[in-house]
Length: 190
Image 1 (cartoon, one colour):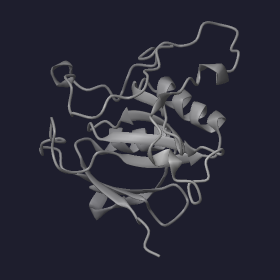
Image 2 (cartoon, helix red, strand yellow; image 1 turned 180 degrees about the horizontal axis):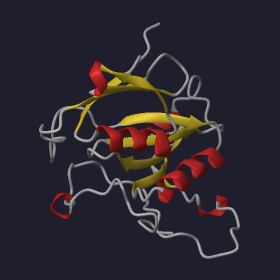
Image 3 (cartoon, one colour; image 1 turned 90 degrees about the vertical axis):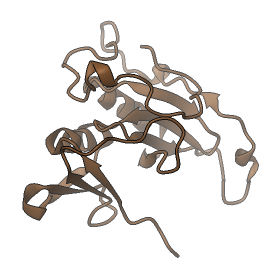
């Protein structure tokens, strides 16, 4: 049976992008290739699931409605607690979310990598047997509140883009909407 082997992205800043996929997504850097101009990362399923190639002067993702890659989805575990941990990693590294949703078969968190590519971090919904029940295909996307999973830290919850500084932040003139995606169910504000 065919399966997706890996994704390959051209990136502006190799170190910043490698840090994002290690620190936020949870991949492991396998190594650098092509004289350090490329990096391979893995989630442990194969030799690599992601290839990053540095092309510092190339344009970023197309804006607006377009044909091409919408997002890459990374399964980050098997429970809502593990999805919350992914949200916490993103928050810790100053990466804002585009949305958090219950899509029936999966629970998802959406964010962007340093080059503006949309990334979905998800866990399967244990209450959905998608192999036998296709009703999830017609189910609406619903808001998902992960705040109930926040551990009691004895202080106020951290706010998005709080310290440490957002090493993934785009320059101010690039912060406009970069694509025409369907709206997400909710935005995490705490």
